[in-house]
Length: 427
Image 1 (cartoon, helix red, strand yellow):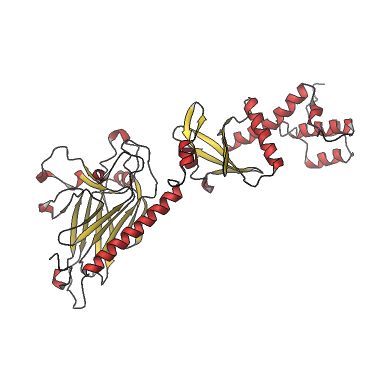
Image 2 (spheres, helix red, strand yellow):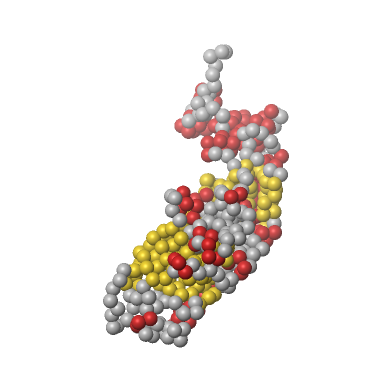
């Protein structure tokens, strides 16, 4: 039979059951799948699997592909809920020699890797059948919440007699949990179809075609893995993984900070300015705001950024956002602040300019705000303009002048006293 490879139409099948990660269960007609390797073809050439990727965050190897939670039970007592096959990145099962027709694919999932101590852990991956996505961001934990341990997917097998079941981990879900054995996990596969007559035109797969399909799938999965690793920053980011920043007495790598912004995703964008874009970064135990500076900043802008960094490092106030740390090297420049909700952030940014001005005024140095390059100017006019600017940044919106009032003062139509909205009822 192993040499036939479905050449004989009588050797085609209409069902297949695999106990993923475990031994055979004869009474339930489940075949064994307990090989600890990244590639396997069954002895009767009815099915095969291919596993790609590495357990990046764990000291794990091929032995971890098979997981067992039987706790000493005899093989005869084994059930599909006690074993599972796990793969770091991409896991594909191929069912050969199937009759043409409509099939129901029942996939069983039992989370036996994340222990009870990791009950907050969430395993998320994508499910493809016959090359088409059937479940995007599938979660075993969410499935369990519905009191179900399996999903049913209907599909079709064509003339080539091949069924492909593919699981792919896109880096979502929990990644920093005990064991760190992330990636797709499957406990059992049950494929079945309704009875029908076999047509004369049905032909099986040749040996060379089976090998070609498997090799092609391995190459495609490898390329997909490399692209994925490049996309999420596992390749070419040694600088980010070895460089750390200190945020409120805790150290984080720059890669952790970057990942916390979802790789500077637009979904995490919370503000824009002349110098760059501000992102929300949700770290494991705190949330911060990360400003990614524009690389096309002029010297004047860089000087202004330097002044802002200096001011935030040396001035402490309730209305000032705290600058936690700075990173500037190669093609990435980051300012990391404490995170504040939108309303509080606007108040804090507004308070920053107010405090700087008030500090100068309290020391009798309000005129120090005048550009030193001006050799001659009207002192009174400069004083009025600075006074007007301070009115515009008053903490109370009701006291701030309108734009038309500002223009009337600048054009000499009104005085500052005439547009002042300060409460004088007690005078």
